Image 1: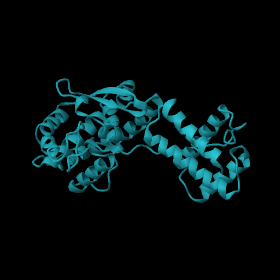
Image 2 (image 1 turned 180 degrees about the horizontal axis):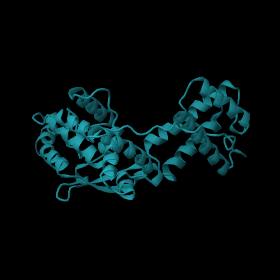
Image 3 (image 1 turned 60 degrees about the vertical axis):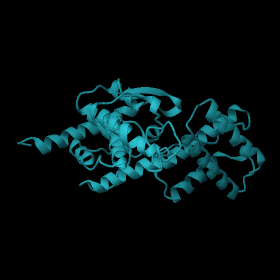
Length: 300
């Protein structure tokens, strides 16, 4: 591939940043998938983007399946490359989109994993609030469960985004979309203790910054740091296995729906652009209610 290819990719990245307003995380995925395809075309001695044909797409799909990528991953890569070539057609860099006819494999139907309410109690019991980091970890867990926000959103919360009087947090979501989310008394109390004690002490170890959650050096807590904290809480609790941060988000949505919240409200709180993204939790809720019934009804 020649310099024109790199220029085309640069133009596409600018398009994603400016016109589509995608997050940096999403853009990095697009860039990685496209560059991976470029490596394949180099192996196939394809020198220009215009020379990529449907038969090459079929060969690339075969390569992905041979390397045993998950169907979800293959679907993402094909969708990414379809968007890339669609952009190239729009900009008249190529005349046709070779990915237009490529079929995207159906994703495996996998219901979101979540914690039962009893398991959430175990997690909260594992939080000790005597130490500075313990206060932070408890506030972090309470806020994640109380709001259902993503870990990436949580790491970006600044002090000015928290309104302790109204018990709300301003969340900066995907595509720079903002939403206000309320939180309850448990999260409020944990945040108050952390802000008044733990955060002030952690902040003294570094130059002042605006972020709500800090690491042990006083700097902003990263998404990776949050994942490490959650895994540590699992190890300290009586629960088995590992935790992934989205389990708290899934638990938030499942418990709301199981206790009577309407779908539109949950969609708004989660920051989903489409109701179909939220509807998956109706299946989870049905299973949740069934298991709760079987576990607690005297004649189940």
